[in-house]
Length: 342
Image 1: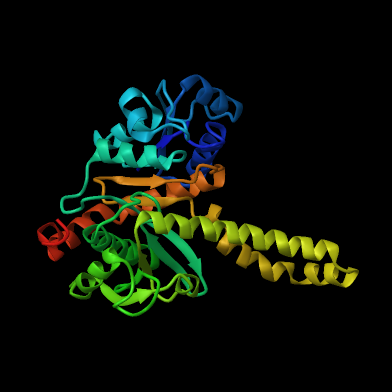
Image 2: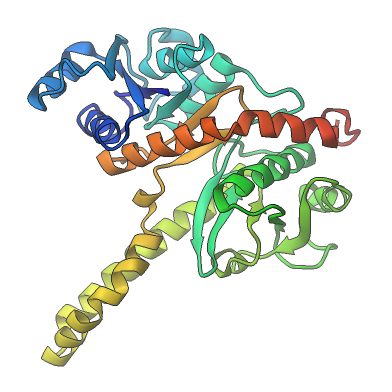
């Protein structure tokens, strides 16, 4: 298994991306990595960690980087040798099996679309983000790839999300919900109202109807479908809420009495598993589903642990043939033949 990594993407690149790749190689026997980016910077980090001559680590030079503040489409046209573009090309040419792309989500989605193309029957790819809930994990998609979705895009997202949930959660028939402002089928905007009856008729998904925002942390369904604008707002709100609540708890303890501090010390071991569960750095990122290749998008602030986790998840998705599973489901459902919202 060989994984291409955009070593220059993200706030802490290339140091943290390279360190994450090193950790993944050290902890596994079947994963090789190709670090794509400025070879001088990357080789220096490898030398500092005594890994310069590791046969399982390859450096592939790319002279350009797409910044977080650049327009994705324009940057891709101007920067043909950008690290995320080169890493994607390695998968297209079958030199590598998957891509890890921290940094600009827009640039990553654009690079995947232009570099790998879409699965037949899928109009737009989606980002599938695992959300921690009281019942385990709920997959939410789209969480940022498309800000203006039509019913067919939500339907295709439901198909792909269901297949991903089967692999991620180990469930044969994961439940699917459509994110809305109410449970009733008559509520919602035009897109959601048009999507509901189509999902009801699907043969390959276990549709449970509308779900509200409060149902996500409850784990009411295994898969939540929404457009990328709404999904990204939900995702960022959840991350901010966890951070704020954690800070509020810490401030309350520090400003409390000695008994509050003693109580905090006593319950700390019990809180560690909860903290780990809601920590977004544990997920490693989210796969971009719908393109012809395994493509993991990691958080822009990813550090070594997240990169390592992303590499392992990508490897698992390749081994479990997620692309082939999505192709088969789309074929069965006949998504390409749907006659709506043209």
